Amino acid sequence: MFLRDFALGALSALIAACLAFASPVSAQPVEPAGPSAPASALPSATPPAVTKSERFSVHVQSTDTQQYHGAFPAAYSGPQSLYASPDTAKTIDATLFLGARLWRGGEFYVNPEQDQGFGLGHPSPLGIPYAGTFGVAGFVSGEAYKVGRDSSYGRIQRVFVRQTFNFGGGEPQKIDADINQLAGSADPQHLTLTAGKFAVTDVFDTNPYAHDPKNDFFNWSIIDMGCFDYAADAWGYTYGVTAELAGARSTVRAGLFQLSLEPNVIAIEPLPLREYSPVAEFEQRTSLFGGHPGAIKALVYADVGYMGPYAQALAAAAGTGSPPSTADVRNEKHVKAGAGINLAQEIAKDVGVFLRLSAMNGTYEAYEFADIDRSISEGLSIDGALYQRPHDAFGLAGALNGLSSPAIQYFAAGGLGILVGDGALSYGDERVLETYYKLGFSKNLGLTFDYQHITNPAYNTVRGPVSIFGVRYHVQI
Image (cartoon, rainbow, N blue to C red):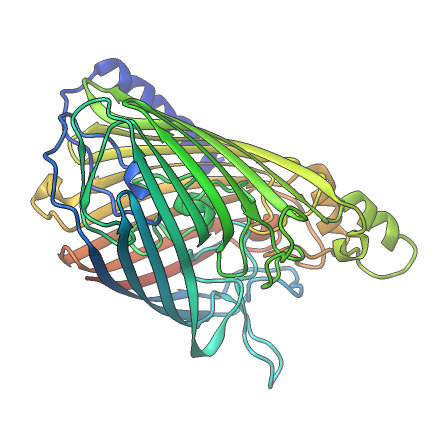
């Protein structure tokens, strides 16, 4: 009930504020996350001056996170439950962002990365690595992958080419130098093509207030649509192509990406268009609250691949004495569709709100992202410039995640998903409350303190609630 009251209260406040129409101000700064970040930033009130084009770029970042939870009540635990005794987990990553301008409008980027650590989960038997990133559908750290190691390892997470075609439409817009973004300019009307290896969420479902686990919220179902089961390997990246057609007030995006070889595995499907995911998004930029910038996005996607239906998995396990497994019924190709709405809106100087609504076809297992069939998240972001702390930030958000009826029956019978599986289930919607404070020592250096309260973790009313305490150190040059 708390999260529902929180959601209704925030929505009521948002509607009331819309009617008030506050005075116009500039947009909150946003750090680009990937190939398409310039198009996702909130628009300025006046066109900025054209900047000199950058030929090469080199940026680095390092992020260190530590999370802890104390003991919490649990009637039982299963193979993918969050450990009910006190536990802590740490992740470390460092990324090198290299960029080069190839020709007019053409850019190349590559991101080698070093990773180490695990997300929270549960200890394994002696001699077996810690089993991390389990136990909460809206997982508690966007810095934790579905794989982990005690020692560091390297990967090329992104390598892609971007081509921009300018069509005029007004004064050129300034593009600042940033990660995976060469300084330069672009016309208000332009077409951007991207091809290679990158994250679907570099281009789609971006939000300046909740999308970057290195700087804002941690929780998976707050930084992205909970039901956006986007194509990705175990680290969140895949191969694909996108096209973005931008106008003065709106942008249309479309993309096609390779799914994993099987649901939730490391290997990407090697054959083009055998298992794939098309995505489309429409963005309309807004000017509400007396001229404050914002944007609303509508997204649709489909996963086309060999995924197991929950009902078939239950039928196959009936009478065997074994729990159902969707892996046993991945015999036919299916199409799973989903959709969502993503809203970002500045309501006063240095104060913004966001809202995401999403749902997907809960007949089939989750393929890549999370075991969530319907989700709502919303929150508030305050830039420290509001109180003379320009590098600080504060955030408060809530999320409500749910399962379809077939998924509830599957997990109640002992089935396992991507992130959850307690061996049994007393169902209740999973509720997340998260708040953070980022203490910025400079533009490039910050220390964040984070708190999450999870009610019904993994949709189980007989486990939890659990409090997650986190600290994050991030430096970027």
